[in-house]
Image (cartoon, rainbow, N blue to C red; front, side):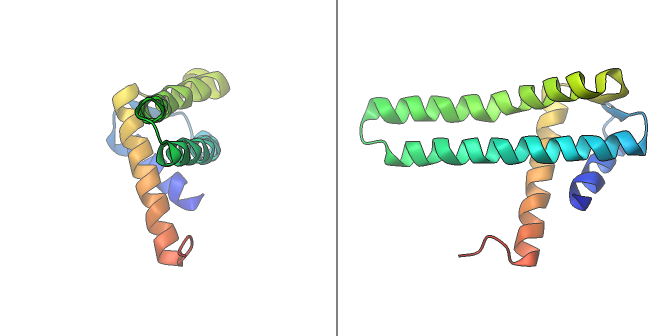
Length: 121
């Protein structure tokens, strides 16, 4: 959670489109982002498993389209969730700023897991 808070507050500081009225709201937004991105990663994992298990061309195309929908749609869902929960008090900008934020959050998540030795088989 600490890393999500740091990354989100850096985005608030350096991306003009990303706004939060207070540190408390940025902390709550980080919690919301953490939960939402964990759900997205689980869904993505299932779609990737389905893609790998596909034996026909049609199944692979459907799985690839589903993966694209999850990748693009997740950003829209994050924007919608933040709007519903926080209204005008928090803004993650549009599709491009939220995509940059999500990439930074996922990169920092992977970095922390690697640093702590988690997720290694």
